[in-house]
Length: 124
Length: 429
Ligand code: SF4
Ligand code: SF4
Figure 1: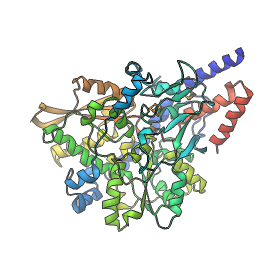
Figure 2 (figure 1 turned 120 degrees about the vertical axis):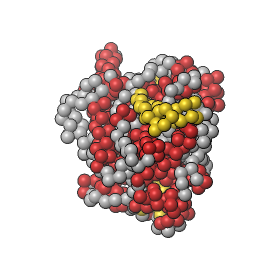
Figure 3 (figure 1 turned 90 degrees about the vertical axis):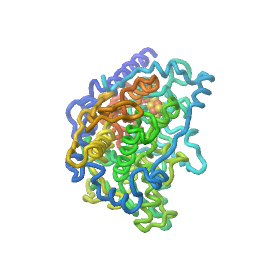
Figure 4 (figure 1 turned 135 degrees about the vertical axis):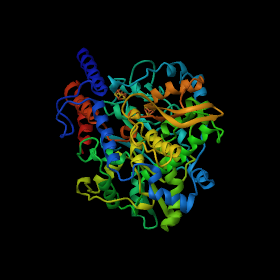
């Protein structure tokens, strides 16, 4: 029993470290990645891919997109026109009633919510 | 349960006509797999996921009303213990086979950057052209692009911002972005007083639903009543959004992982697909649209528009590097051509902020609530890193490896080990 407890705690620690991005194991899942990389590094790789593609795009700004110009000319008229308002805009709902109810039932605590740590494990 | 790219799917198929998505769980914990490490709770921005009783024990999403379906718990659980509930995969296969349905695929910007990882490309590889071919091979009658409606969003949301700033529109500042459905639900639930600050613009996929079945159908000559529009998203909360009564025209929503599953189950390998382009009418897009996939991208796209609108053709600024990157809160200012006298006072520069992750958004929300926000425009993405690191994207290699290491090295009990070995086999399926 003690052994299991011990191994579990060890594992938990390892899991935290791995997802926290401090240390990656040696055997990378993705074969292209033999190096040790942190979670944040993988996230940065994804972001880099996006900005690279942005630089390569012929049109860089929304207002220059010819099919956007066409859509306004043919159909919507101009941004925030009546048609735009009807099809492209929306409204929102106040969903706080459920929070109040759950607070009364002891299922939600505003204090716990307000004292959540700012930041994420991957930031180290 | 079906397993898509290492994540389990329960297979609930809700219909927007009968289900209020607010009553649905979108993620839940398989308690038999939970190793009680607490990582999920550290990523959760709302306290929704926690031990079911007291301070310890297996985690659980305690109530759907508290969960904004961001999926950050799921993508970071080192034990692979968290599953998705809703899955439209079978319904979409049936719609594709149904000759009476005209199926339209609308992939989000982040799909072209995430799908690649499911097919062995390194993280960050853009496979736009191959993705389009893959969707056509899957049998979609038309491939549009959510990037087109991202450009449309910038036109509408940028215009709204400038009208708020000048006072032409009587709505409060700062304006918040509305693209992220987990953020919208978060604000509606925990900061209802800030709702008037959220842009009235639908998200890009909301616009694709609204415009696709009216403008798109009319221009392309498609019978809108037969059109079955599939929203392909890096996001679990988009399943919630697709079911919102305010949002029309979206028939089904799937994640990057489920798309990869669908392709693989039909023997389609992204690597074998040639480069192609989406249907131009609602498929042509700009760099401003593609960066929607990254934290700060919507802001940068909006600034590209705003500077053009304020300064005219002569002054073009494309790059706003201050809003890029993984920092939790990023700020930038853009000088105006002349001082504006507005109901909000004299404005000499546009001040903007970007929150990468809801935990950081909370800081900005508390500022606004206290009347102390210095900003005019705030972008919020629930997921740190933005959509490309969203709850529906492939599990990052680091976490997948943690799952594997968990199996191989630390698990003591043989029974448990066997169980993990099984799910590991599924992971590699
Ligand atoms: S991250 Fe996964 S294993 Fe860890 S406590 Fe949460 S559900 Fe359990
Ligand atoms: S999906 Fe997001 S809000 Fe819901 S439990 Fe997971 S981390 Fe929390």
